[in-house]
Image 1 (cartoon, rainbow, N blue to C red):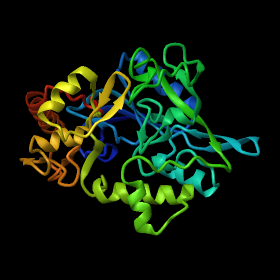
Image 2: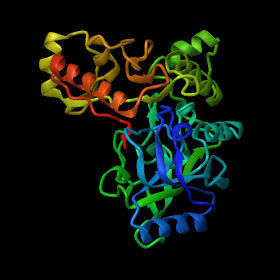
Image 3: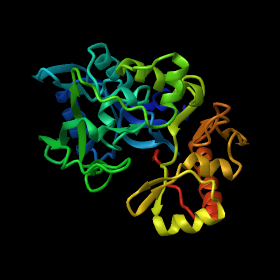
Length: 339
């Protein structure tokens, strides 16, 4: 393993922002990982772990050590005739891992098809889509404690999953790096989820009446491709904002003025689609110099010209937050990690 200096990160973040790292290392095993961490500790460098680069916005050059996790490998262990444990190393591409499971007819992750990024980052924000979240099939993950360099294990409870939340984004932030993740998936008697979003409509278009998990994946892929831009073509990080959850009392007040507002009740709170809020404020398709809100999905901010700086993108997102707050009294929270 070689530690490189002044390394360009432009191709390693899906926004395509042209920044560099003072030091950079790509690690393929735990011994290399420990070596890189020790190097940073001895030299008092800040460490940034980078997976697929799909959930990060660089607003400046990084003055420490960027470690790209390239740990690879997938293993299986049968539990019984209907359940299997599947473990993937942190550097495995998420969508390719989902397709690996579908090829084996393992169910549980099909609704999470085509989500960008790597397996190692999936528990950090409890990735979710179309009625499914990581926590639904998550068993445990192995992590490296950055303080003592010992391997520890976090189960579903200790991960403290919430909506786009986990212990790794809160009290555990900066204390651990995820090495591998284990999921419990079904081998038969799959639980098919078609209730969320446009899955049913898409299945009808495909002429599917009794969908398999592979059909669900195909429908999800079609939906995502129809409204979400490919980061290989135009720089973006997918959904830039979380869908806000507000108290029921606040929602009822806002609903009086905007009765058409889509909503998803959850006990004493209500979740509102951030994309709808942003679109109502006139941002869908709007461009300011190099940055724009995507013309098919207002929730996605894009590096429209390919020349946007991270600060331009961040400032654009701030304008969106301010306009939604001004119009609806609801404050959006960025889902993307800001560096």
